[in-house]
Image 1: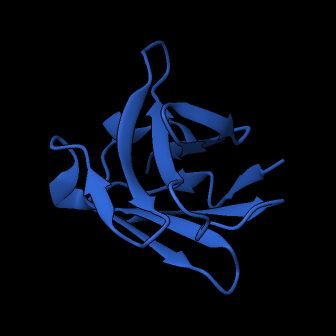
Image 2 (image 1 turned 180 degrees about the horizontal axis):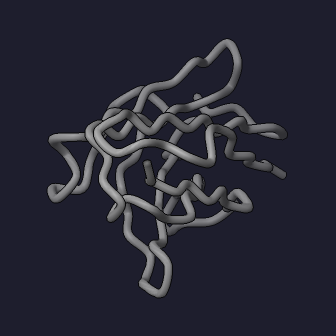
Image 3 (image 1 turned 180 degrees about the vertical axis):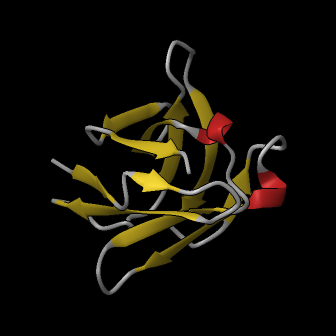
Length: 117
C-alpha cells in the first residue's frame, strides 16, 4: 500500500519559488498506469488540481497555473517535486500530493504553505 509524504518550507516570500517534494513509499512512481499529482486547497476554498507527472515522466498542468508550474521526479529517490514560480499570497494553501489511476487516491497528509513577507 503506497504512502505519500509532502515536505518543504512552510513559509515562502512573495515573488519567490515554492518548492515541495512528495516521497512515495510502498510503491514505485514508475509503476505502469499510475500518475502522481499535486493538488492544493486555499483556506476556505475548494480543492484545485495543479498538475501531474505520469509513470513514464510525462507532465500535465492546470491551464491556469501552467505558466508558473513545473513538476519533476527523481526515480532513484522515489520522489516527485512541485515548483511554483512567482508566488503571491493567493498561493497560500494546503498542498497535497496524491496518486491517481481512474481517480485520485492515496493522498498525502498535506502541508500548509503560507506566502507572506
